Length: 439
Image (cartoon, rainbow, N blue to C red; front, side, top):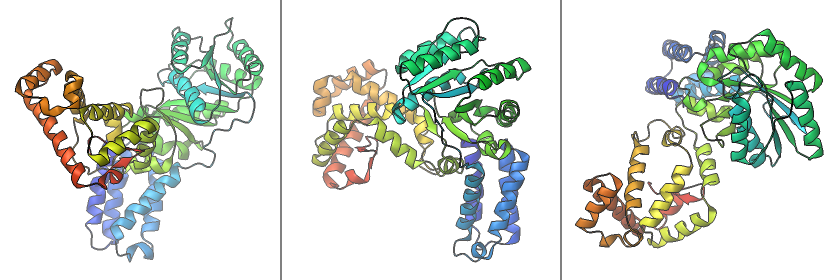
């Protein structure tokens, strides 16, 4: 996420940190580089000008210029300005009615149907609110079937209704939700390949007849300024309350995330951060800016670990770690837990720039898991019995090589030695209630 722009900012920050003191010239040079990086990231030109102007004004202040660490102060000022431009006081979902009504609008291909299912699961798990998914997209033949499949996966009821009128389907869905005491109705409305009057007229009719608590525009973050321009037009015609920005995990530039609020005057409320239905988060400008600037997002990483790791298993691992009594079966289980946190790339995206090179770590973990799976339970419990012939068999069974098997066993042996020498290390390596197997 944001690797293209974050690498540019890390280069700029390295240069500014190397300055003994800040002068008007090196400030101007750094801000020119910042401006070019933002423009390359497809940030709206007016927004870029405002961010650079505000940063220049604050950096030129006496407090920054005479600071003992002026380079660091420059970075802090720029960080704060970005957060300010992306923050909106109305960013929380406002679900005042029972049932609450959320309309999801957007163009085809933005991920609207998937976003509907993710939102329902997020409300269910985070807000303890039951939802009804309403299939009101009658334009795309597969939309209803897709929503039904997704609803079954997350255990949320789907309302298909009868007839060809989205208005009737939504009206019937609201009545059903009331009688069934369902907390929220999420409507997957029809999309189009582009904005047209027929689409807007349908949305206006729905809005007028059934005033929603939220009208959320689902946008593809990877389309940059095009996403923002689409939002401006939707807001002009139907007045949206905010946006769900999808596919943020594949966005290397961050143009839409940075520009959206300043251009549209509306908040980004939620973001899609991966392909899994659990990959939906509240939009937090502080965390997003930290990622954009290459500073990582350790808070989100810890939260994801906390949600993923089983507390009872973590406690068992903790006790074994302190006694240095773990075996390869424990090691295998911890790798499985780590995989549940998401793709290796998404985990690495939450770590600050400048960490040791971990490229290809996901493939290495898969190969380690294959090696462990090829061992017998007795071998995982008692690795000392793994002799040369066993190593050859494990390598063949896992599709790896004997040197790779040897390396895994060597790493495990070194980890056991480290446990014996450093009893207090387990607390230092713990994130989210569990020690990481690859620490």
